[in-house]
Every structure is written in C-alpha cells, then in structure tokens.
Amino acid sequence: MIQTYRPEPTELRFKQKLLADDATMSYNRAWGGTIPFPESRWEAWYDRWLIHHDGERYYRYLRETDTGEFVGEIAFHRDSRRDIWLADVIIEAEHRGKGYGTAGLRLLCKAAAERGIQTLCDEIAADNPALSLFLRLGFTEDHRSPETVLLKTELQDRPRRVLVIGCPGSGKSTFARKLRDRTGLPLYYLDMIYHRPDRTTLSREEFDGEIRKVLEKDRWIMDGNYQRTLPGRIERCTEVFLFDLPIEQCLEGAASRVGQAREDLPWVEPEFDPEFRQYILDFPGNQLPEIYRLTAETAADKTVTVFRTREEAEEYLRTE
Image (cartoon, rainbow, N blue to C red; front, top):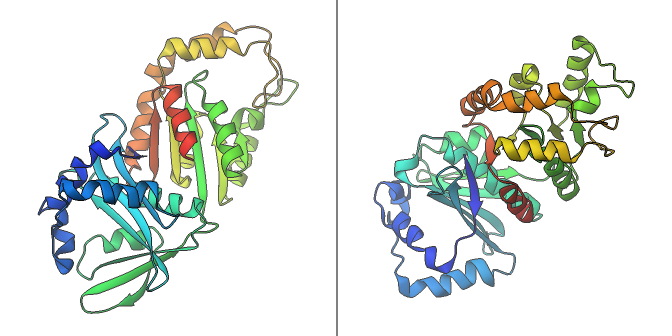
C-alpha cells in the first residue's frame, strides 16, 4: 500500500540510488541503462522539477504507508517537441512484484487528470515486460517500432469509484465528505441507503439492489462497511481508503457526535447505544482481519491507502 510523497532536497539520495541500480534500470537499456545523478546536479534538478516547474513537470516518490520506506518514483512532463505528456514510473527492483507498479501508475494518472491533462503517454522498450501493465490499465499502443512502443491513455472522465471503510468513529465519513467537496464525485452513505428515517430498514434484496445501482456508475464515493457486501464493492471500486485508528480514538469520535444532526444518518442519536459501542470494541477482531484480506487480494488492481491517524487523512486531502 503506497502513497505519493514530495521529497525534500536532502532526500534525493534515494533517486540517486534508484538511477544507479543496474537491476532497477534494466528496462532502460534501450536508452543507456543506468543514469548518473551526482549531488552537484541536485539543486538545479530540484528547482526545475519541484519548485519552478511551470505546470509542465510533476515528480513524486512512492512511499510504503506502513514502513515509510521509499519504493519508487513517478513523474510526468510535457514533451514540447512532440506536444505530448510523457509519464515515467520506476519501482526499485527489490520492491517489484508487490503491486506497486500498478498502484503507482494509477496515482500518476490521477495526478495528471487533476491537473487537466487530457492524454498521457509513455514510451517504453518493445520488450519491456511492463507493457502488459499499461495495457491492463487502459493504455493503448499509439505507435510501435522494432525498438520502442508509444502508449497513450485518455484521462478525462476516467472512472473513479472510491470506497471509504473502517471503524465507526474513526473519521471516515468526515473524510468522505471532504473528498467529495474536493473532487465533485457523488457521495453515497450506506447508512442512509439502508436506514429509513423511522428507523426501519430495507430488506436484504432492496439494499443489495440499491447498492448495485451505485456500483454501475463510473464515478462515486461510497462510505460504509456492511461487511457482507464488501467483496462485490471492492471488486468494482478503483481505490480504497481504510481507516485503522486506535480503538480509543474511534470510541471518542463516536461519542462526540451523539445528539448532533448528521449528513450520514437519517436521525439524531440521543445516546451512545451500548450495542453500537460493543460493535466498535469488537471491530479490530471481528472486521479488520477480513477487510485486510480482501484488500490484499486486490492490491495489484486497486489503489489501497491505509490511514492510521486523522492527520494522515488530512495530509492526503491537502494533496487531493
């Protein structure tokens, strides 16, 4: 599970290591293999790519969310000679085969789309095994020579189907609302679908039917666990945000909203229901293991982001 990270000038040692590694840069043999990146170049490079980029360059590290370890880099820039936007994804050799390439390419396409880029291209060696990855994620061959393949994908109006899941009280609904406000994606609360204002609920068939109507759409945010329905929703979504906070913080968060009108529930809770409190206490043992299993099974096809603090969620929103 990875996220983008804007490196500091002092952290360019990782980029130097990445470009100097034979195994990592084996894909680049058609263009010379490894690339020298001495410290004497760092200041000018950093200024051009991360400070005065003029909207024509984008660069981020890929960081493993659990360990904080850098695993690769993503970038794109405008090729003025051909008037195209060229992508670049590099995963360090020792971290390949873990789904980071897929997640990194998704994050790169997302960043490009948010900056108004219509079409993103990548030029790779004709024998590069990553070709299948690009094709699987919606790229098509624009031009092929004996040595290289130019790939492209249309970014605007790309499907974006987002699941926000995790323990009640962790802040996931607040995050979902803020994400909606930043992206314009329609937000669907499963609690609002399942519960009626008179505190009755939909039947299983009715509930499943309403969920299917949302899943058929190409752009949405869906907030809620409802574990029975989770496998099908994970299969359909393009990204998952999982809130895994300490249980004490979840209990405090749930208690703090008692007596308040909420957008995600059709009534005001007069008290902290003991049964609901017990559900939160049991969540780490009863729900989380299965959630992690389901997300791990689809990690190669989805972007999965785990937040362990509310500050991490806020930091993500600042880059959204």
